[in-house]
Length: 346
Image 1 (cartoon, rainbow, N blue to C red):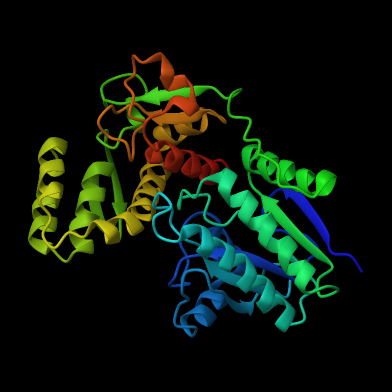
Image 2: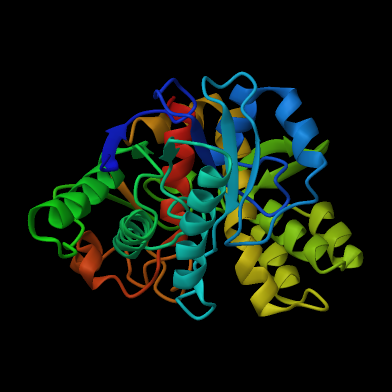
């Protein structure tokens, strides 16, 4: 029997008629944001208890558990790579995620499996690259393992991701060659922000908005981010100083001086930290949450000229800010905000 490839838009925790779903996990396997958090919430506390016994999982590998309250037999957990500009073997690791999941599925008698889009959320893996790796790896696995799987499905949360995967699959189906993934971003409105006292300033990390995480009160996302930076490198003196003030400029300077700082380590955790902070900022401030959700499916872009990581490297006065192909930065803050928007709009 030929393996069927399917794309659907929806919630992977619902009934999709498959034996197993895949969780885009973190290496602890103990839950997180996005798909990972949704799966843990839907499955129930029993999943967390079983995951505690697995001693984590390396990036690019996979482990299997029962599905508990989710309507399928198994959950296969795989930690995807955090995108670091392609400098850390990310593409090979993402391919390994898909291959490891499919191998584990076959070993456990799974005939049908549903994937999310691994690593394209808060881990910021470029969507055009991810779809080619995902479908290409699955196609190769099926060629090497005929009659082992009946259905390989992707359950995708938003229109952009669904269109990209469907276009890639259509390219394979029509010609046997990889197609260029279509993100349909040109038709999207771009909403820009920069300083907290300007238009759309509530989206800025410097915007004053109290929220609590683990019993600690933060006055801004910038304070939370710099506090977590200090904690990550065990500089508790800086962490305490950061918590004692609310002036974001002073907080930023303290963050720059964190002791024992390692750029590689910070690059690997910063997106997750910012996503978790943003989620609580907007979850706990109802007015801000409503403003964020009201942006719909618009592209959100921090117009910071000097910041080419979190910002787009262009000013709020540059006409090129509305053209993603002309951005000079990665715009990670905007994409993290869009993922939070997706999570809160459900």
